[in-house]
Image 1 (spheres, rainbow, N blue to C red):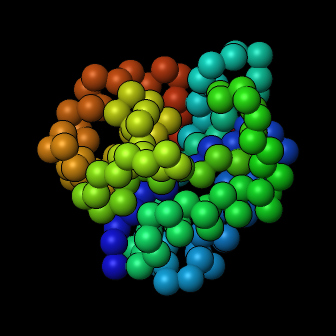
Image 2: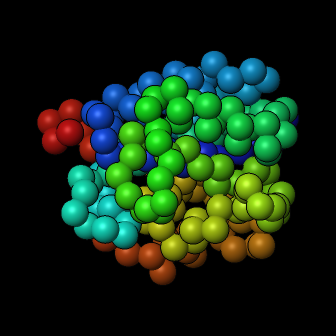
Length: 164
């Protein structure tokens, strides 16, 4: 089993529901066990600002799936929940599932880059990741807690029942 971290994000079609449904689908993946899930966080969109705010989370799973098999299955979940891939890289979406880390592996292929290329700069990934893996050290030796001191929250907040 390999410990993997997956980023979840949505800003269309009831984003909280999208993430809840994604959690159920991730739990059902073969040879995979959901170990931890962060709180849901509200965040400002990257790229074009004329779109709704996002809801983000990070989950930890233990899996025997290969990185590409895991990617294929996550993309199936995205499609089942209405994801349409468009040229606009940071546009609105029903669901985005990104493999952030796959154990201590480093992979750079046409389809998949691990660690995720934006992991160390994105508050909506770092803070939820730190919630479930505060002692994490990235494959390049960077301590997650050190990254938190360099990346401001930029309005990121934990969603609660009264404010979601």
